[in-house]
Length: 188
Image (cartoon, rainbow, N blue to C red; front, side):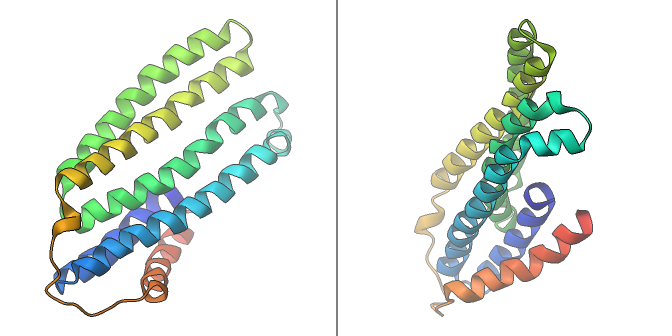
């Protein structure tokens, strides 16, 4: 819920609001703040998922899936950053970059998941399942790298602000949280 539904629309709304008034510096700050904030949230969630993978697997009634849970955990951290970039691109109306990143992510996800599942299933079924999760993280990582490339190619850092009003860190983070929390709760 955090990575796929909550982050992107919240960041998009803040970025589009700030861009609409001509405050491009604040719009870029919204990306930077959301990227760092959600990276920290994602890192915490990923760490907890790895640490408690055995407990989660046992509560689900299948202790064998703990390796798959732990293997999937880094994807949470990567996807939070990816969603922040997608939110920025959406707020700027750059839907082509989002579409390309989604196609790239899914193509790599499927191809890499199949390869690693095939390799690791020879050892055991639980490791085969864990191997299938590798593609999810790798696909998200490449999609994130593509969006960073698209950001730099569009030269968003060079766009001048017509509104020079300073919008502080706390206000931007507050807006992102105000927009994202209800979305996360309703989707969760």
